[in-house]
Image (tube, rainbow, N blue to C red; front, side, top):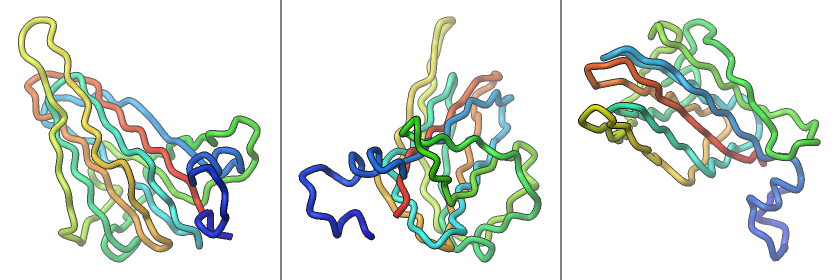
Length: 172
């Protein structure tokens, strides 16, 4: 049953947390200058993935791109990437997520065949004690059944730095 079909005083996110159908995936990547990490968030399930948060931060200036399209048509999984651990937001939930979330640093696991893309800057700093900043790329969106997003984070600074990604969503 759709969360929106319920007439509850709480919002969808609170309901999803209580029902154990909210999830998070997050990781940190060390990227050399001018190198990238690719994160595939694919929805092969029959449910929608309702994205609440997609956020990336970096220790130096970077660029984050988000490509959206049909899974295996516009965003193709050429070979398996490294699986990312999906964690339920409710600690005692045993409801598995239907999403496929993997990363690749070689650039060969995923192929793009779409121009549907957004780009954002991950701010860098200057000076001896400079640190990068955060880029909240989107606070809401739906990855429908049969669709995917491919996230590319690129270090555009002249030094090796750490970058992270955090995606929070619920499924209905």
